[in-house]
Image 1 (cartoon, each protein chain N blue to C red):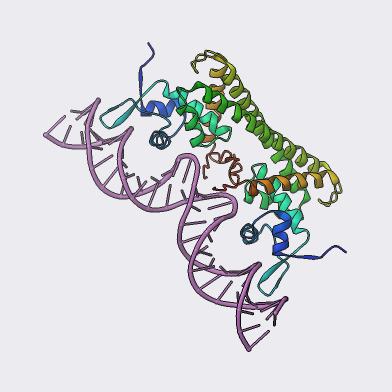
Image 2 (image 1 turned 60 degrees about the vertical axis):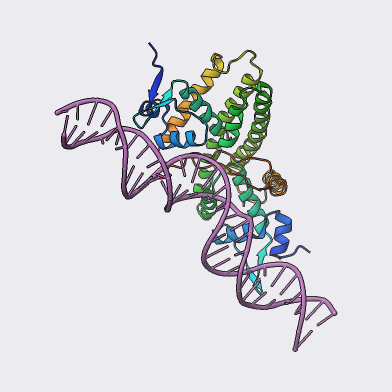
Amino acid sequence: MGKKSLDIAEVVKRSGLPASTLRYYEEKGLIQSVGRHGLRRIFAVDVLQRLSLISLGRLAGMSLEEIGAMFAADGAATINRQLLLNKAYELDQTITQLSAMRDGLRHVANCPELTHFQCSKFKQMLRVANRQVRSLNKKTNVVTSRVNAVHKLV
Amino acid sequence: MGKKSLDIAEVVKRSGLPASTLRYYEEKGLIQSVGRHGLRRIFAVDVLQRLSLISLGRLAGMSLEEIGAMFAADGAATINRQLLLNKAYELDQTITQLSAMRDGLRHVANCPELTHFQCSKFKQMLRVANRQVRSLNKKTNVVTSRVNAVHKLV
DNA sequence: ACTTGACCTCAAGCTAACTTGAAGTGCAAT
DNA sequence: ATTGCACTTCAAGTTAGCTTGAGGTCAAGT
């Protein structure tokens, strides 16, 4: 039979996330424990799926707040779907930018004799970057933060 | 005639970056001022290109330190090129992940009657995310931070 | 009954990349 | 000569997302 509830240690093992992170997520309202055994948190099994979702979101550059917002829209399935689509759209933009950057890097790495600033293709890239930043620094809101992926120090 | 040097105010205007950021970058050794007019920093024109490069790197998720490293490798063009290629490769991986995420989001948004956790395609996505996180939390180093794009508060 | 080890809480610390604020400086215009 | 104002410095603050540490608790094994 599938277990109905999990000890936090179990969740740690099965999710790969440290306990401190689980507590942090609970504090932020992203997950809930269903009870205690003594002091120990007990979680329902589906916390695992929820954690996967959170991880997925983080990988995609969503902030915990944004992720929380998606969860929060529990009743209103419409809002939920729209949110997802918006996110997908944002991802598209990010992907486009990153692709350009990647191509640019490869080009520069292979463009011989390039004193680094004579190549017109390269200059073009720089112009694009410039526009991006300019609008980032202008649009007073928007454009979330990206993954700041888990700084593990040696 | 093209100007040889720029007042910091000019750089602010032309780069779109705030003065505080320019000072910060200088402090970090990413750009240099060529002199002063009174207290005021004077920059050479090519600081603009350098700033574009920095912005480009940031957009692509490189840290200032990584960007600095690329600049530092001034004499050693080889190292420089390898660094660029490595970065390009990392970008490829990121792009792949983000694409998966985007597709997943779209799928979920359109998959009707989905209680959210019955869809196998969706579950697959979650498993992937899980693996990613697991390795992020294990590999004691690596995997840089992504753009933490310019948090402008309202 | 006692020990133990895994959990708990709460506050504080950490990192990156900046921003903000207070107090000072000096070129240029009047 | 005086004023103004855009710049300067330096220290401290900010944000997100956690981690770390000190000191406490408690279920389970002996």
